[in-house]
Image (cartoon, rainbow, N blue to C red; front, side, top):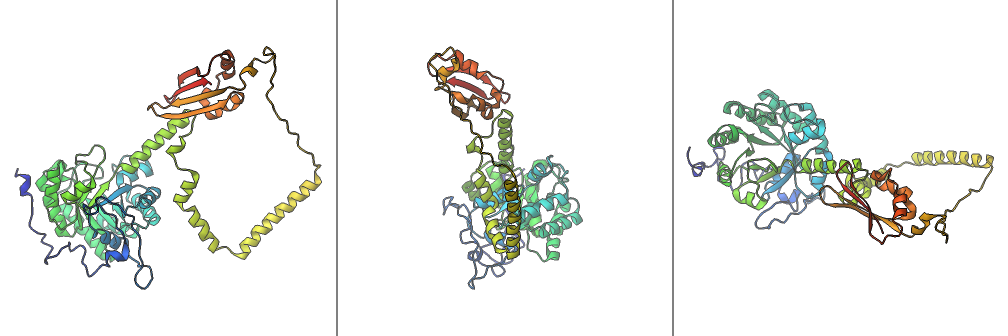
Amino acid sequence: MATLSSYTSSPPRILHRQQSKPILFPPDSTPSIRQLYTKPISVSRRSRGAINATAAASDTSGNSNASSPAKKLREIMQSPGVLQGPCCFDALSAKLVERAGFPYCLTTGFSISAARIGVPDKGFISYGEMVDQGQQITQAVSIPVIGDGGNGFGNAMNVKRTVKGYIRAGFAGIIINDQVSRGERGVVSREEAVMRVKAAVDARRECGSDIVIVAQTGSREVMTLEESFSRARAFTDAGADVLSVDSLVSREEMKSFCNVYPLVPKLANMLETGGKIPMLNPLEIEEIGYKLVAYPLSLIGVSIRAMQDALLAIKGGRIPPPGSMPSLEEIEEILGYDTYREEEKRYATSSSSDRGSSSRSVYGNQRIVQDDSEQRVDPVVEVMIPEVVSNESRNPFSRIWSRSLRIKIIGRDGIEKLDVRIPAGFLEGVTNIVPALGGVNLKQLMDDAADEVGGKLLLDFKDAAGDRIQVFLE
């Protein structure tokens, strides 16, 4: 096999003029970046990794500059530096990506298959389910989304249907690969792979769309590096806008790939766990020559772990600690409750207000009649005051009324989950906090240790979740 340095190529055959940017972004066919994003997110050595939130701008006339998702993506790709794109799997995760300040995001069949139907991405999830999930995602955000089209769900005709469906769903871009079937290592022949890309380009033209076509090959793992580069060149000649090669195993291979038609943007797939591609930071990826970088497992991975931890806590009789979850107010803010309420006021009518008042008055009158017909009886409130007696033999427990219990829980991972003190007179409510203490006669334990000094350890055990529970008498 030839050395890696030999895998450089001449300028792309599809470029007939000397340009500073790929023909994918013709300067006379798209608005300037300033018209769409005043501060596009990028990571470059000039900005030293500073990430700024993107903001939609208005044109000189003061009107909003309407633009297709694909055009927004193309404009973003004109900005300097590498562009990071976390992979979402539903509308909520997409909203969080946007709120975090990323200029675009991607979807993956792996994550959507896991989140939507709970099975591996091995061909179970259908074209219709992917399109439906994608539409929910694109409608939830204003940033452009690149959708995982996989192998196009079949032959070239299926690819055309897939691309057209993704366009209607609002995607800015679509990834088409050369796998034989979803989630499998095998790839189709180079000729068939190229036909898929041509079919995608034809579907785009027939729809009058400018969706960005990302052509991806998995041939490096099952064939050769040279074959992967040959396919990348052929995909570009067939009309692909962005290229991606999976399973590159070194910086040298990544650099050689970026030298294949260097003016064509490249997508790096940073598989967070178990991948062969080196895990590099954004500045390193930019230096190698990539334009886009995807993180396919981060969001679905941390979501799974967080839900597992929460379920273990609930099973152990607790709720997740406050620091591990947002408040109800934060959740409502993320989902846009305030915006909803403000917009709802715009459509309030006098008739709806009257109906609301009428409804309230009817129920109010009924309540008044009911109150008048009933005999009013002032409630009896019994105030329970702890009995303090001098004769401790009459009430042994009274000796420790002024003392408290300290309950401490250490998770099986060694992290402290709870450290709380409860007055000894309120033992009835202890199991509401730590149900694992149900059935334990704390009163008897405290009575037996009434004369002990503070810090006496009363209980030390592990619950069903493997967390260590300790109870001290203070």
